[in-house]
Image (cartoon, rainbow, N blue to C red; front, top):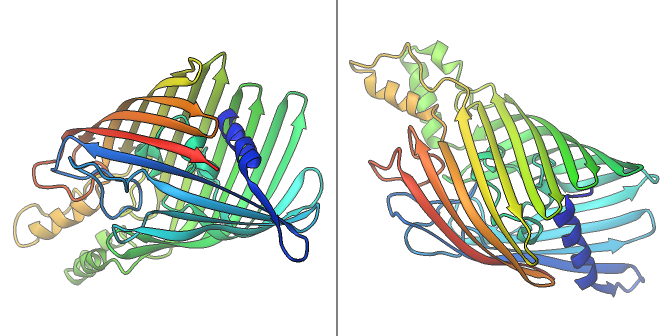
Length: 400
């Protein structure tokens, strides 16, 4: 599908720089890649800043693992209507604090006619506005997508398929996509979330310098091998708090994620914004409202920008009926702690410098304020709740 202007430019550069080879049967194979090499640090060792699904993060000592990755993509063209694409990605993601390789995409694409195409295999899920290029730093103005929105759904891809419709009407292009599949996400803490099935749809309208998007995703999912939550729910049931346990299911959970976004690149003014709402049937995965806004201005090869993000919890943050004194008080505290989601807001400034035709240098400074807890920071020490933290990052995004 088409992306906003910067993403389209990225794809064009990838096409220019890509290497085309031929298999023995004459099938052309195009190989391209992307990556980010970045150092990230904060002004505190009381907690660690990370991205979604990272087991650890960064404190005062700069580390490369938070914002760095490397991707390689190959597409084999079987005919004018059939092609095969695979994409591998190296990054820190999952239950250990190590770089690991993963198969991000692996699908066959069939062009049914000028407007419709079908993809089967492992596909990217259209959950967010920049889902297709969320790992391609060069395709985005910001150094990273804001955690306030981009931590709400942890799945990047699914094994299944999608149908894509794209048609131009004068100066406008409309793209509609419907994907269905199943996926398993290994999370920090060595438990996993399994979505079966997940259905994700979006409609994108591009008109001149503006892009508008509406998205809807729904899934049935479960939280598996989470020892602490399994023990907590079992204990609640054993003391007879069945009404509380009924609001804390760990499997066969229904959830939805609705989002709307807009981006622009008009007269050197660049902007991007998304608003999203997550709802689930378990209070262990909280209902949230989240949003961000990014604005920048292009001065030749330089783009200074500002970004603000925020997230709030829509579901209740405690069970009012649980006892706060007596022998069950510790259990009450554990339950109310488990149903509290991370609350935080971010104000950030950054600069992108396109110093080479296929590479950009970026610096970004975020001021993150947590509320009623540790926000989305990990490995927080006692007393960190409610703190404000500076996050500094610098890196080079490139495509080849």
